[in-house]
Length: 151
Image (cartoon, rainbow, N blue to C red):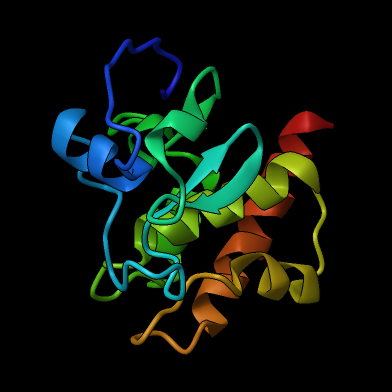
Protein backbone atom coordinates (compact mmCIF):
# COMPACT_ATOMS: atom_id res chain seq x y z
CA UNK A 1 0.00 0.00 0.00
CA UNK A 2 1.64 3.20 -1.20
CA UNK A 3 5.03 1.52 -1.08
CA UNK A 4 4.61 -0.03 2.37
CA UNK A 5 3.66 -3.56 3.37
CA UNK A 6 0.60 -4.02 5.55
CA UNK A 7 -0.45 -7.25 7.21
CA UNK A 8 -4.15 -7.29 8.02
CA UNK A 9 -6.66 -9.96 8.79
CA UNK A 10 -9.78 -9.21 6.76
CA UNK A 11 -13.19 -10.78 6.46
CA UNK A 12 -13.96 -12.51 3.18
CA UNK A 13 -16.76 -10.00 2.52
CA UNK A 14 -14.84 -6.80 3.33
CA UNK A 15 -14.43 -4.38 0.46
CA UNK A 16 -11.04 -2.89 -0.29
CA UNK A 17 -12.65 0.55 0.01
CA UNK A 18 -13.67 -0.08 3.62
CA UNK A 19 -10.27 -1.47 4.60
CA UNK A 20 -8.51 1.53 3.06
CA UNK A 21 -10.75 4.13 4.69
CA UNK A 22 -11.64 2.53 8.02
CA UNK A 23 -8.64 0.40 8.89
CA UNK A 24 -5.75 2.16 7.16
CA UNK A 25 -7.20 5.69 7.54
CA UNK A 26 -6.70 6.53 3.86
CA UNK A 27 -9.54 9.03 3.53
CA UNK A 28 -8.61 10.19 0.03
CA UNK A 29 -10.47 7.14 -1.26
CA UNK A 30 -14.10 8.25 -1.39
CA UNK A 31 -17.32 6.30 -1.50
CA UNK A 32 -19.77 7.87 -3.88
CA UNK A 33 -22.16 5.27 -5.20
CA UNK A 34 -20.88 1.94 -3.85
CA UNK A 35 -21.78 0.29 -7.17
CA UNK A 36 -18.75 1.11 -9.32
CA UNK A 37 -20.52 3.77 -11.36
CA UNK A 38 -18.97 7.03 -10.12
CA UNK A 39 -15.27 6.15 -9.81
CA UNK A 40 -14.57 8.25 -6.71
CA UNK A 41 -13.21 5.13 -5.00
CA UNK A 42 -10.60 4.58 -7.73
CA UNK A 43 -7.19 3.24 -6.76
CA UNK A 44 -4.33 1.83 -8.80
CA UNK A 45 -3.86 -1.90 -8.24
CA UNK A 46 -0.88 -3.49 -9.98
CA UNK A 47 -0.87 -0.75 -12.60
CA UNK A 48 -4.61 -0.85 -13.34
CA UNK A 49 -7.35 1.50 -12.22
CA UNK A 50 -9.95 -0.31 -10.13
CA UNK A 51 -13.03 0.75 -8.24
CA UNK A 52 -12.19 -0.23 -4.67
CA UNK A 53 -15.90 -0.52 -3.83
CA UNK A 54 -16.06 -3.53 -6.17
CA UNK A 55 -12.87 -5.25 -5.02
CA UNK A 56 -12.85 -7.54 -2.03
CA UNK A 57 -9.96 -6.84 0.32
CA UNK A 58 -8.77 -10.44 -0.01
CA UNK A 59 -8.33 -9.84 -3.76
CA UNK A 60 -5.74 -7.18 -2.94
CA UNK A 61 -3.44 -9.65 -1.23
CA UNK A 62 0.13 -9.33 -2.53
CA UNK A 63 -0.93 -6.54 -4.89
CA UNK A 64 0.69 -3.14 -5.23
CA UNK A 65 -1.97 -0.56 -4.33
CA UNK A 66 -1.61 3.18 -4.80
CA UNK A 67 -4.07 5.67 -3.33
CA UNK A 68 -3.90 9.44 -3.56
CA UNK A 69 -1.90 9.43 -0.32
CA UNK A 70 0.88 7.66 -2.22
CA UNK A 71 1.09 10.28 -4.99
CA UNK A 72 3.32 13.29 -4.41
CA UNK A 73 3.87 15.06 -1.12
CA UNK A 74 2.90 18.46 0.23
CA UNK A 75 6.42 19.61 -0.54
CA UNK A 76 6.62 18.01 -4.00
CA UNK A 77 3.32 17.49 -5.77
CA UNK A 78 3.04 15.07 -8.66
CA UNK A 79 2.86 16.92 -12.02
CA UNK A 80 -0.82 15.92 -12.43
CA UNK A 81 -1.63 17.42 -9.03
CA UNK A 82 0.23 20.64 -9.90
CA UNK A 83 -1.47 20.91 -13.26
CA UNK A 84 -4.95 20.42 -11.79
CA UNK A 85 -4.23 23.30 -9.42
CA UNK A 86 -2.75 25.46 -12.19
CA UNK A 87 -5.82 24.97 -14.41
CA UNK A 88 -8.34 25.35 -11.59
CA UNK A 89 -9.57 21.88 -12.46
CA UNK A 90 -10.52 20.86 -8.92
CA UNK A 91 -13.67 22.51 -7.74
CA UNK A 92 -15.53 20.68 -4.99
CA UNK A 93 -12.64 18.20 -4.79
CA UNK A 94 -14.70 15.03 -4.32
CA UNK A 95 -13.51 13.41 -7.56
CA UNK A 96 -10.03 14.95 -7.47
CA UNK A 97 -8.16 12.03 -5.86
CA UNK A 98 -9.57 9.62 -8.44
CA UNK A 99 -8.85 12.05 -11.30
CA UNK A 100 -5.25 12.41 -10.15
CA UNK A 101 -4.85 8.64 -10.03
CA UNK A 102 -6.45 8.22 -13.45
CA UNK A 103 -4.15 10.89 -14.91
CA UNK A 104 -1.08 9.50 -13.19
CA UNK A 105 -1.82 5.96 -14.31
CA UNK A 106 -2.31 7.13 -17.89
CA UNK A 107 0.96 9.05 -18.11
CA UNK A 108 2.80 6.19 -16.37
CA UNK A 109 1.75 3.94 -19.26
CA UNK A 110 1.54 6.53 -22.05
CA UNK A 111 3.82 9.54 -21.59
CA UNK A 112 2.34 11.43 -24.58
CA UNK A 113 -1.42 10.85 -24.52
CA UNK A 114 -3.77 12.62 -26.90
CA UNK A 115 -6.75 14.48 -25.50
CA UNK A 116 -8.94 11.61 -26.72
CA UNK A 117 -6.82 9.13 -24.76
CA UNK A 118 -7.10 11.35 -21.69
CA UNK A 119 -10.88 11.46 -22.06
CA UNK A 120 -10.94 7.67 -22.21
CA UNK A 121 -8.63 7.35 -19.20
CA UNK A 122 -10.80 9.54 -16.98
CA UNK A 123 -14.13 8.29 -18.32
CA UNK A 124 -14.68 6.10 -15.27
CA UNK A 125 -14.59 9.05 -12.86
CA UNK A 126 -17.64 11.29 -12.73
CA UNK A 127 -17.27 15.00 -12.05
CA UNK A 128 -20.32 17.17 -11.50
CA UNK A 129 -18.44 20.49 -11.27
CA UNK A 130 -15.92 21.09 -14.03
CA UNK A 131 -17.27 19.89 -17.34
CA UNK A 132 -13.96 17.98 -17.73
CA UNK A 133 -12.27 20.48 -20.09
CA UNK A 134 -9.92 21.87 -17.45
CA UNK A 135 -9.14 18.36 -16.19
CA UNK A 136 -8.28 17.16 -19.69
CA UNK A 137 -6.10 20.21 -20.36
CA UNK A 138 -4.36 19.80 -17.01
CA UNK A 139 -3.52 16.13 -17.58
CA UNK A 140 -2.35 16.94 -21.11
CA UNK A 141 -0.06 19.66 -19.72
CA UNK A 142 1.25 17.36 -16.98
CA UNK A 143 2.03 14.66 -19.56
CA UNK A 144 4.07 17.16 -21.57
CA UNK A 145 6.00 18.14 -18.43
CA UNK A 146 6.66 14.51 -17.52
CA UNK A 147 7.80 13.74 -21.11
CA UNK A 148 10.22 16.66 -21.03
CA UNK A 149 11.70 15.49 -17.73
CA UNK A 150 12.11 11.93 -19.05
CA UNK A 151 13.85 13.18 -22.23
